[in-house]
Length: 291
Length: 275
Image (tube, rainbow over all chains, first blue to last red; front, side):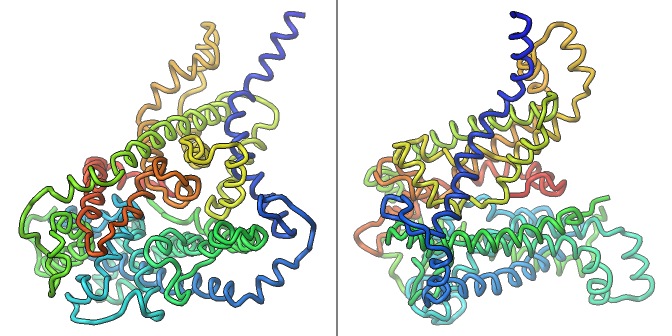
């Protein structure tokens, strides 16, 4: 009898190491995930209890909701500006410093400094420097854009903040990729008389393209989840011009208490991010090729 | 490295430094504005340099607002949260790397699979769970959703796998239990990665915004990232204390960042820290 319980203990004990992780995975990932899907297909009361199953009704009303269409468009509009600006800017920075020369370690440090700053602090600073009247951006560039009052421009403050927060990591990934391009290939091209432009477009760009694709797909996914900067800087305004999917989900769920609608938006976000994660995984293996 | 720079190198380095200064400008501005007087915020053209280096704004930020309390909250949540997070990840990674049991792969993928479900899209249901558990406005409520870190579990497992199996066999022959093997052999051997991941966890939890905003209604329980956006001085031009608060947060993180710079750069270069 004793022997048997000892053996039981031995077979069971490995699972004990796994229990905390599994409980947490269930409690804060799988349970809320399936519950969100269930909520999105149901009528949910104020305290989060499901009243009745309504099928795809929530989605039907969601996709005809102008407000939601705005969020969807805005989310993609953010990605459309954010990703190219981020990529081009980080590429320029990376091309300037990827060769190990004097001062380049210092410049590299400057480029990655934003990584040390938390989102809410950064958003507050950006809010101040883009302030149309007392902010320094308008003054330094001699412009008078009403950044936070003009629906055409408000999104750009969020885009700039997004680029600023993302650039440390993306810059490092690109520098790493550029440094891993085999030297002999670049030198051979130079001997053949390739100028810097040809060298970049014909040799470096194709060889670092897996890293670029990796950055694009992960940043696309991040864009789908954008909410924090919107909350701190613009509260979705002016005229909902910066209202994103997760921001609207937050408002529907917590300010309006409309859990069904909030959950339906969550499901849309899941689907979008899931597709983009698949894309990211597809490129992840080739993401960075170090030798 | 060639000590003599070519002209094109000088042009590139200068260009890079200028771009770099643009990039760090918001950080400079935060520190600079933390010394501004109310008047200096409203002057036209806007100033970039404070006229005095008075600490008035810092003193006001610390005495007139709950900033100190927010910092304590963040410190508790980040410290305890990252400790628990590491314990959970280490236990699971150890089981995957060293122990044999049925369904191991399945359980492992079940935990890794949570990576596919972005936390920000789960906040409505997670909030309902936390409020049902009566954990709104509690430290445990704030840290709860960060306690599982699949990426870290995966990285620990990779690191544990580099420890030769013969260690475990000889430990077992000497009558060493699994748990003892973990605490006295595996962990000491993995100290660098455990420390790096702990620091990474600390920073991640310290920096989060959305979830802590949601699960704290009582101002006393706010974390610093949430609290700092709500300092809300009555006079709209009274930004001084806000920038002082931002600078107080920036200073330690920039120092830590500069000290850890090499590690961070290497970590990303080796593909270690993603997400």
